[in-house]
Image (cartoon, rainbow, N blue to C red):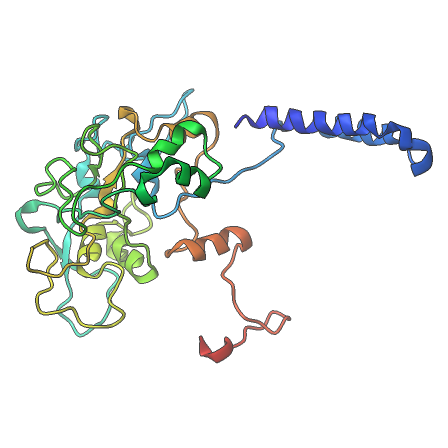
Length: 338
């Protein structure tokens, strides 16, 4: 979408409306020419921006999409490539250690620790990311007609993607479409390879819940450095995903629970899903890349609150969490103590 053209067409449409209604000047009792002049004046603002459209990515991090993006016109971007964590081809870069993932342990009686004691993963390998999404597409019978009926806002060339991209694999098993899935280094890895895994194929969704996300960030005073003033080293994404995942609602894990996949074990069903990324250098996610090339992107702002979609949409619209009050600014207990 070209914002300037949209603004121009909008103003043009209004001018046409003013012209066609000119015969009503006498009966309406006001000068429509003044309205037209007002519209023209409005187009002479200091900024050419007339419309603001915000695109929110759901269940995906910034680097999941833009890990290898390079900005144009001398601009800068803060991502895995610019930090030397990965190379253009998606392989580990010279600063891969900055995003190294660790295992952890909590032998104390505490139920939850923001920064538990850490250690290396066995064999220094990332727990295998597991299969997520359907074996076949979600559209019944891979019907293109049904896809167009269920989603009528896409460009014609995008509809075939809705009826393809199934994993072809059993859910919650190692995603063998990913290169070296069982021996990935403990950090970010490229999902796609252009053959068995393309950017239009289904992929698993990472855990995105309040307590899990806080623990994944691994924040502690002892982690503060000049380069990392927040004190969050983000080293527990894989560990949290493989030990608790979306959660068990307070229930103890079964006796055969495992953080690594086994045909006889129970897992969270995720593996190291959160560490996967697409590679725009290889042609992945071209539409998002075109938006980044032509408009603005938030490489230094990711979300307002740790948690899922609902909480962040509320923050975007209100700038605060929704809470019950007496209408005078005093908080009240929610109905039924919910």
